[in-house]
Length: 165
Image (cartoon, rainbow, N blue to C red):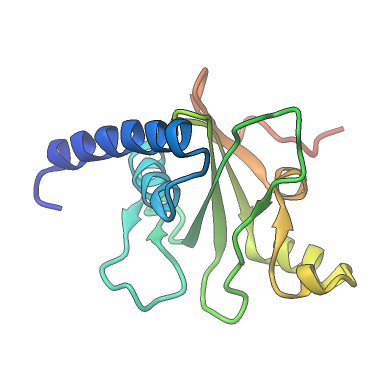
């Protein structure tokens, strides 16, 4: 991306299109939330996007060197619950997963990060076939991971911990 402002403008247009598409058609526009989430995670967390598409990860955190998968979930009705995140690529090389939660306008409101070993412990501890394949609920991911950004406070730098007593 040679011009970050052009990319920001395109993503803003994609958000509007995706939200309008869902309101009009009654279903999400396929594939768009992951593209928006990847852009948001890179921009908001200062990640470096990967150069090739064949790796099992999407970006690198220059502060830690972690290779991260970026997942997204657009939450249209917070009262429903039961949302799941996309398949974790458990057979690929990566160190952490970033989950970008977006509202009905495809705007990010929370970003969580979970380390591979913590996610593997949860997947290994579960006997369900869905978990064995690397699928997990948003609620479970939020318990395992930690909040690293929200739209009110911005980026958290290790101060907030959802697992503290």
